[in-house]
Amino acid sequence: MKIFHWGVIIMMTKEETEKLKQDLKERGYKLTPQRRAILNVIIDNEGKHLSPEEIYDQVKMECPEIGLATVYRTVQLLEKMGILYKMNFDDGVSRYELVHSTEDHQHHHLICLKCGAIEEVEDDLLEVLEDRISKKYDFSIENHDVKFYGYCKRCK
Amino acid sequence: MKIFHWGVIIMMTKEETEKLKQDLKERGYKLTPQRRAILNVIIDNEGKHLSPEEIYDQVKMECPEIGLATVYRTVQLLEKMGILYKMNFDDGVSRYELVHSTEDHQHHHLICLKCGAIEEVEDDLLEVLEDRISKKYDFSIENHDVKFYGYCKRCK
DNA sequence: TCTCAATTGAAAAAAGTTATTTTTTATCCT
DNA sequence: AGGATAAAAAATAACTTTTTTCAATTGAGA
Image (cartoon, rainbow over all chains, first blue to last red; front, side):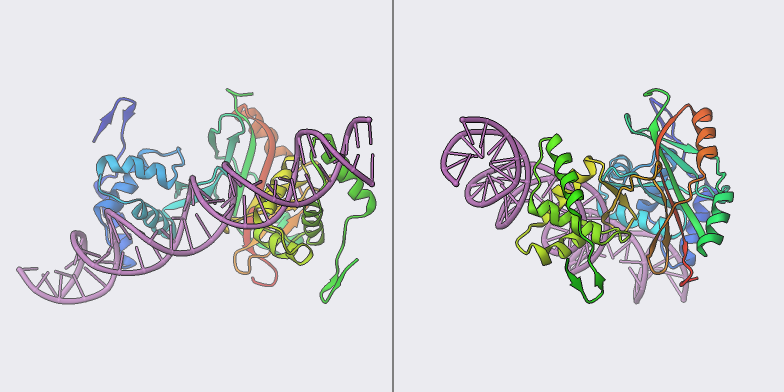
């Protein structure tokens, strides 16, 4: 386990690594050091919503010869496997976060218009609205994407 | 008024054109034929959520010598003036729609995962949720972006 | 260890968007 | 109307993010 000045770096446990290896194998994919390193960076930065470029910068510390294309390919793969969720905060890059297997709906995001901070909101409360829309528009809802723009406690 | 095989093309009325001219003048901008043509295309295609490229293709019928950069500059300007709203449906391009001055909140969108159709939903119903979030997270909400992904009546 | 398909890094290409430069034009002022 | 002037347009280049190509490498299983 590596320790940096700002705190403890969380890594995948042996069991998590085995689970990942298994998931990949089932689909005919391989567990390479690059893929493990990329996923580690994402786990280490939970809640930060890293872009491919940012993941690349971090992962190069562990894996200096890695290419940016590999990062793009890997996050795409992890998204397809349901391990990552791709999001867009209109800042010109795509950002990824870990899918929390405990939640059944995608959580909401609060985006500060001044400092750009992104906060996650567990609260859901959309069931009533979704039910109403499903019926009124004859549309079966699979997922939602809810963002609130405004000013955070530090900026308002 | 031009008639095409698929129906009637709606244009800005004299009054609307005058209003636009006025709005532009107040900010030191000019009403050029290109800007008028671009806005006409957007009005003609209400509900279609055109991308800059799509606007460009349409506007070239009226204005064959126009450049794509002019379309980009114009939609940016119209967005800054509060006439257009920029949106992102994760299909790789930004899309624009007219701001409806009658509604006080941005409406929601239903996006079909199969055919890609985008439907607008007037229903709001987010006040309760927004109140709760404002208090719980000490975050003042200015706007929201709510998308529901699923299957439309034709595809489900 | 051997084989083979999957994966990688490097570079080029694509795709979307923005900036630069020169020329044109809409508006304002007599 | 005509002329000055600042804004806008066209054309092109540049830029940014993401994807593709391809030869070389490597992981996983026999």
